[in-house]
Amino acid sequence: MLTLLENVLDRADGSYINPEDLRTLDRAIASWQQRRQTYDLIQAKENAIVAQVLQQIQATAPDIAAKVTVDGGSKCQRDMALVLRYCATAMLLQDEELLKDRLLYWMQNIMLALKNQRVNDFVYRALQKAVMENLPKENAALLLPYIAISHQWLTR
Image (cartoon, rainbow, N blue to C red; front, side, top):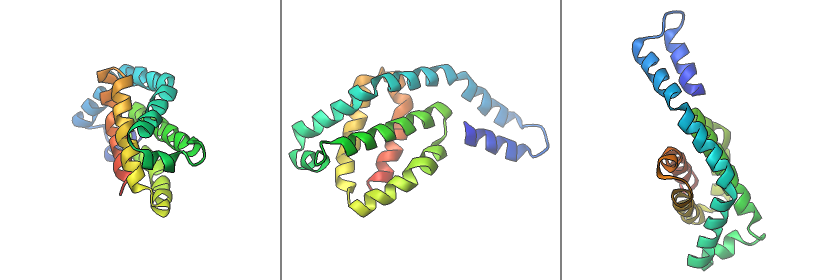
């Protein structure tokens, strides 16, 4: 939404906002309540979602579980929670660039240095599944595009 507002203001540049931009703003405002409800739900379910991902990793991928639980899983849990929080904020504000600028550029470099792309591929697939199982369908649908962006960025 921040990027949307900046873009609208840049295009207007001293003129009135054009009708298409006004319609885009109307749609963003109209969906605020649902996005806010989803944001609150993600916050309330964060621990359950992250725990489910770790359980799924341990149950289905022992080789990956060994890598993510080296420190008791605390770094993996921290990173997943961080991604979940930034994805929730990006979803709330409808701002993919916020997610990229504030988290993914930085985190991608770390993951490349650690060569964690294969592990991340599994973790973020499990995270998508956990979100679908812990949130109502309409709420999960709002968040999943942002998790997909994170998945793509952190597995290349």
